[in-house]
Length: 336
Image (cartoon, rainbow, N blue to C red; front, side, top):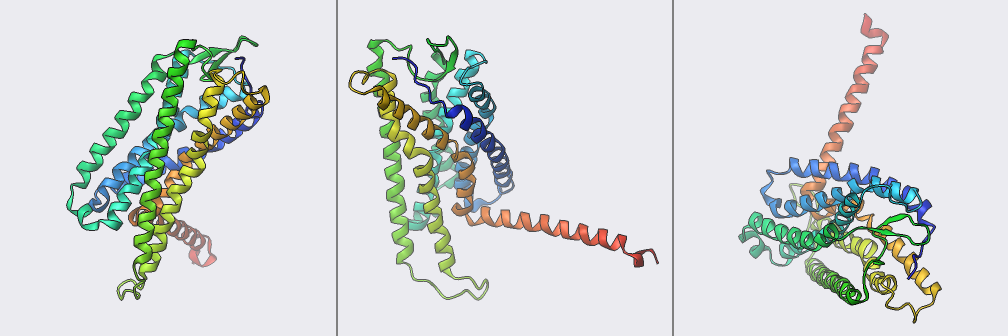
């Protein structure tokens, strides 16, 4: 099947990915800084491990963006080597499925809310390290194919190299295998997404069934405020899945069948074009996760949120003090 181009991406993607690069780099570097500063907080050892791993995965994706920006700005012509294409493609895959750390954060909150005694009695740090190693092991194993197989494909109409633009190099004997692998990955995603939904339903039921207590004498805060923050965390995690990953995995199946030519006769060229356009949009949406994940951290733990609030207060106070000092120094009375 001939290459189907979605021309709009050559204008939209460089702008979009440039914004994502600036915001994603700043947000994730700052999140990593905050998580490092909170390393002595034993109360959040496990969830901090998940957040740190997710931040590292997001940064891997962010570091690939300059190449993708150049690629799309150059009308989809890959100017770099095949090795660079393979590395960029593997990092993209790793970022996508290391986002399952969001699910581990969600499950951690599930245990903390619905089974607090069990969660508190277990070795949190050890569990976090084992689960993180498992997620990385599975994701890296699955990404090996991107490093081994050639990433560049030649566009027959223009003779230009393109990076991971389909599967035109696949033979008829391997097309069904490639399609099966993709549908298995899609199935795994929906299983994880279902687990997230079920955990959130259970957390929401537990929180809503608890009565709102009177204000505490020490803090003056109601439990209802904590409950609202916890519910916002549920919406934040589900929101990231729904906005960034669900559209891609809904469209991915038909797109694989399209680019492999397995539905070349059944579908019209217009259908193939619509599927490819939708696939390109979902790829763009997946890039949003690297700036949305740090927002989830603010809802996931009170300590993370309070540290950021305290840090910005200190910065603000320092600025006010500097302004007052400068104002005093410039005052006529100061020279008397």
